[in-house]
Structures are given as structure tokens and as C-alpha cells.
Amino acid sequence: MDQPRIDLRGARVMVTGASGGLGAAICSELARRGAELVLTARRRELLVDLAARTGGEVVVADLADRLDVDRLTEEALGCDVLVLNAGIGNDGPLEEATADGADLVLDVNLRAPIQMSLAFVQHALAERRRAALVTVGSLSGIVATPNTRMYNATKFGLRGFTLSLHQDLLGTSVHASLVAPGFIRDAGMFAENDIELPPGVRTKSPQDVADAVVRAVESGDAEVFAAPPELRAVAKFSGLLPGLSASIQRRLGVSERTSSR
Ligand SMILES: NC(=O)c1ccc[n+]([C@@H]2O[C@H](COP(=O)([O-])OP(=O)(O)OC[C@H]3O[C@@H](n4cnc5c(N)ncnc54)[C@H](OP(=O)(O)O)[C@@H]3O)[C@@H](O)[C@H]2O)c1
Image (cartoon, rainbow, N blue to C red; front, side):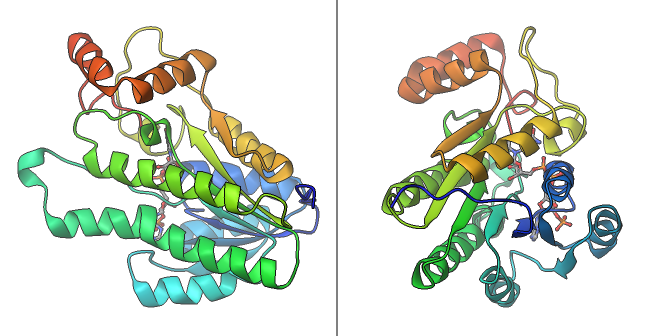
């Protein structure tokens, strides 16, 4: 079977992390294209405000709570498109790292997306229905930086999971894609952290990420970037030669203040 084309007009789309900087932009673009949204995150008031602009249903859920994830997964089965965008990047200094802190990042960034993805694609395949899964990774899924160990661990993991699933689904009615943003200005975790970038490093906008999500849904491509070409090239080079990348980063003075989310 050819890779299916998903028409967003009238499609039911769940977006996790809808209350966040990139989630809001993704939801607005999907609504503009006629999707019926299911908006989910923990902060109800932000979801209700967003739903007043985009329409759609609000489902409050904590991805670190397994019962909530079970409930949200059930809800996702009725959707045509699932956008797994929620994520946290709260790595601190190595001396303060704990197993509980690692569990939290694993749960939100990796375990919940994996549980939801598996159930979503299995259900759509069983019903022989067109469906699209989009996970939101990061260039931090390709290149490691200092003081982002759990963020890197989960974004590398999410990339591996999605790219493998993409291959499992080739020739079926369902496709899976990864959207990989670089540094995003104006809204979201990078913009809110007042991080100083090395000179010449360009950013993209939340709208660019929303456009990348739409491209992923419509094309079914394995990986869609929301990053300038030169940053993508640096990330790919760093992924191939991590030792050299680490010494270049050290010489440039890259620390947690400049690491990509
Ligand atoms: N911004 C960037 O420059 C950038 C770059 C590369 C990749 N990304 C990726 O893009 C995605 C969105 O990031 P963002 O910049 O929009 O970040 P953000 O503004 O911090 O939003 C994060 C979202 O995740 C949700 N979330 C966090 N913990 C949760 C939990 N326990 N349960 C349910 N939802 C939870 C938050 O909702 P509540 O707090 O309401 O629960 C919020 O909606 C993330 O996966 C991030 O890794 C961002």
C-alpha cells in the first residue's frame, strides 16, 4: 500500500503539551487547517484559553502518572493523528542528579510517548484506517551537549523509536514521523530560558515547528527538521563524530547555557 495521505480537514488530532510554547502554535495551525483538536497537558486554564481560540476538547493529564497515561491512551485511539509534543528538559548540574529526577524525564519524554504510540498505531492498523503519528524530538536527539544528559537520553531514544516504527509501518495505512526542532525563538522552553547562542547560530519560529508538523502529517516522511540547514549539518556531523564535536564545543565554551533543547 502507498503511504497514505492524511487530510487534516475534519481529522481528529490529539496534541500533547498543548499548553506549551510550541504546542499552542501547532494547535493554532492545525485548527486553521480544519482539524478537530483534543488538547492535553496538566495546566487546565491554559488549555481552556487555547481551546477558546482553536476549538476542541480539553483533557487534563499528567504524563508522569501512569493512570493518566492509560486514560489518555484510550482517548487517543479515537484520533486520526497523534502529535506527541510534550517534553521537559530540566537537567541540572551532575552533582544534583537523582534517580527520581531521571525517572520523571524518562516517563514524560519517552515512556508515555512510547505507550501512546504503540497503542495508537496498533489500533489504527487493526481497523485498517489511515492515521499519522508525529513525535516531537530535537536536534538534541542527534548531538549531545554538556548538562543535558537526560534530555539527550530521551530525545536520542525518541528518535530511535520513531525512526524504527516508521520502517515497521512502511506499506501500511499508518505512518510515523519525527519532527526535530533546533533553537526556537519567541516561545517555548528555549526562548523562556534566556539562553545565549554562539554568534551566527540562527533560530526558527514556533510557526516553523507547526509547519513541520503539518508537513510530517501530510508527507509521512521519517524525519522533518525545523532548523536552519547549517545547524542540521552541524548536528549530523556531531552525531557521526561525537568526540570531535565535544572538543569543538569545549573550545567554543558551549555549556548548558547554549545547549539546544
Ligand atoms: N523550544 C525549543 O526551542 C525546542 C527545541 C527542540 C525541541 N523542543 C521540543 O518541543 C516540545 C515542546 O517544547 P516547548 O518548547 O513548547 O516547551 P514548553 O513550552 O516548556 O512546553 C512543554 C509542554 O509539555 C507539557 N508537559 C510537561 N510536563 C508534563 C507532564 N508531566 N504531563 C503532561 N504534560 C507535560 C507542558 O504542559 P503542562 O506544564 O501544562 O503540563 C507543556 O505543554 C518538547 O518536546 C521539546 O523537547 C523544543
